[in-house]
Image 1: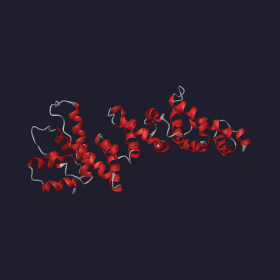
Image 2: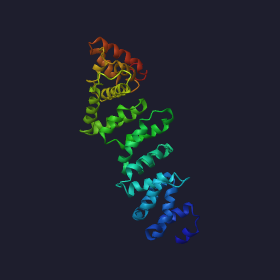
Image 3: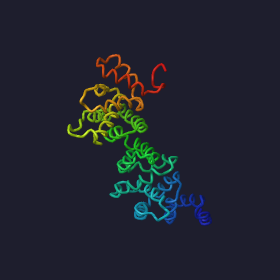
Length: 307
């Protein structure tokens, strides 16, 4: 084995495999494997990282240096070094800063390899949620691909965090809403605590009122209205519509934007059309009935029964 290792070309698969085989009895293979780790294909990173685990204490310094400041032209090494450190040193005080750098690289990466990276960074996912959320909320058109990757990573990493899920739901666009809601709904069914907490947070948002002296043109009114609409759609899907129907009542001089947005977004957000039709049969208030009827125009033929 040593002879085969010696004869193999430096970057060959034969050299990599023979070094991995020799490592348990030959610690001198560790520096070579560390270098291979930093250039490895995503599918190979976990294999090399795990093999080097017994030698992690010797690698901390070099790997953290790569995460913080990779050589020019070798920026791709940052993600590989960080993936190793996520297993070797998950409690490090460096992660809050490193998490921002990792996310910046991660959302630029080929989505084909997302599964490998998401698993690699699971031990430090708490340090990635905030920077991923910043990308998630960046709705510039040129950020569409990055925002999509951040959405799927957050659906995984925030799955056990009701507070984060509720916030993500309320700030979601139509595509993001479906991804995050599926996770929140699973939590509602699987946990006696997570589901009610998400619903409570959504209800609390609906109950908020902007300051009476806040100008109609203030962006804070717009943001609150959109969050309340998302909260309402989520509650409707969770089978808790009690807070939703009053939002459809026309009550001047109240700000009408929540009612208007809700009419137009229930369908695109995937709200339960059956619940809307049922309420239409029961509702006595003419302005709410009007809004319910108008909202049906936002549903596709596939969503409407009998179409």
